Length: 243
Image (cartoon, rainbow, N blue to C red; front, side, top):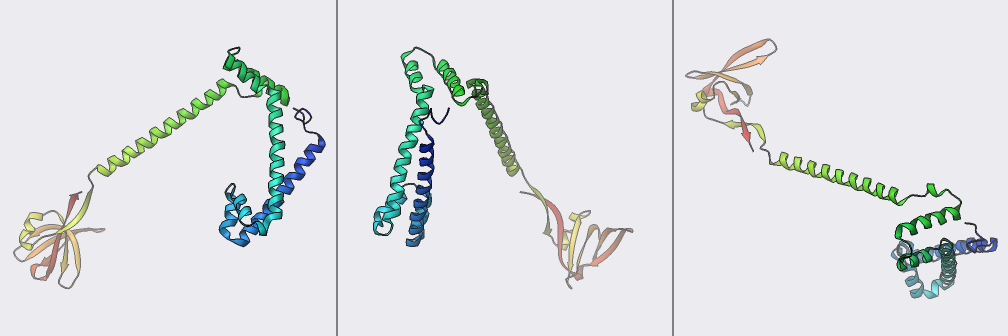
């Protein structure tokens, strides 16, 4: 669709560009004044729609000139863009097609096909290059399928995490016991702390009348050593506990 068909002469295009530049400059001018007044006002004018109008009215004495320029150019640009959009819709016959669908003269699918054909003629492209309704629906189906798969995987991961959290946990701990109970732990790994705070570990192999026989495995093989009862400060046995 040419600019002339949309009602755009070279002068109109130049006017649009000039008005756009003037509107942008006046907008920046007002925002600078707003930041000088308060940083909250500045951020509001910059990021929140219509706040600039509130600021301009409340601080008329400080920004009336750039504010008026911004408002006037924005209104003129809005009217001109509306005319352009209206011209495009008129060229495509979108409103006529909508009326024909409502009256039952054509179906919705036929209206879509005619719209695509007119759009292709306006912009000088092959109608086959425009996205077809079936293709759009196919893409939506694929996206929906991928979304379902991602949701299923997320649910599966959550279920596995819940199962892992619910499963009992087993860890090794050291529990204290008395010398009189030593025979109950023969063959188990024990930890002995002497009265001089020396720690020894190994497998409890034998309990004699006045001492314990402990066996340890080193690189050279197994060797045994004895610990007298009178030298023992504490005794602990290594056991599994479930939580």
